[in-house]
Length: 184
Image (tube, rainbow, N blue to C red; front, side):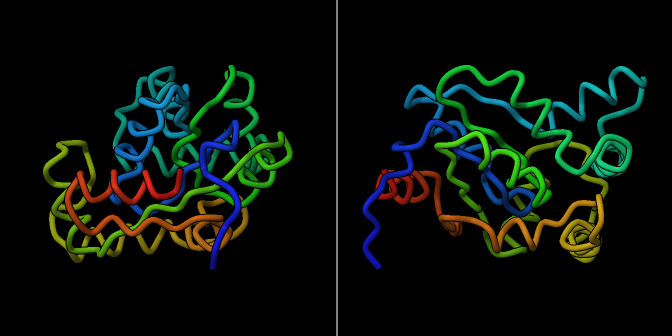
């Protein structure tokens, strides 16, 4: 199917995807093209810091879900929108209401980034964050909790299904960058 648009035709580029799929590398690619950057996960990290809680994966999930429950499922997108200035990449989208809100701002495209789970587990181990999963089985179990619990909780599977473009990042960084160049 031939598309008649480029990703960079859009003012706002949203990123969703599985853990350690390469969303940060995709964001870095577009930042080099002049886009600003906002991470919904970083907004939750700010909340954790204010509460003197460690930025573990479990805490990120729990507090993100709590914020959605207390302030509406699009709260992180609304907080991010207040910080948008010009062309911006919005990373770590994990709820359909966030997508809906951001689409409402206009000139928005959603990219989903995915990779095989074994590759993502190895990447997660190498990046050194508190992932709360020391085995592949724990990593998969944790991911399944993020995929589709409904309500105000994360709904990663629904976000992936709403993507305008899906990038499979199963190779090298250079191969990922080549895929992104083809998207424009």
